[in-house]
Length: 102
Image (cartoon, rainbow, N blue to C red; front, side, top):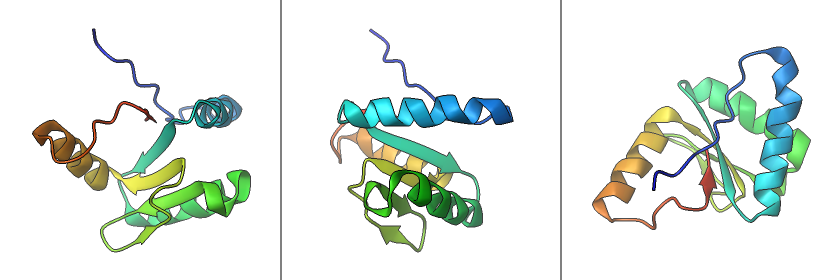
């Protein structure tokens, strides 16, 4: 059976409240939320923004040269890092991403 992965992608300004609520629900279910961006600078900006919303202890960041709070329930990362995690998961090198909301 195919697994459905909700995407926290912002398309319109009024959708952001729904995305925050989806993140809160996922964390209540002990799932990890992943927010990706194509640029490291945008990842850093989103890390700061999410830290203000959810608290710095609940948000982590993974980029090519930065790794802070990598076990947090919300992970901000570049798309390159997510791609590498998925490749590693496919090869069996890490735990499958069963408990993640992307």
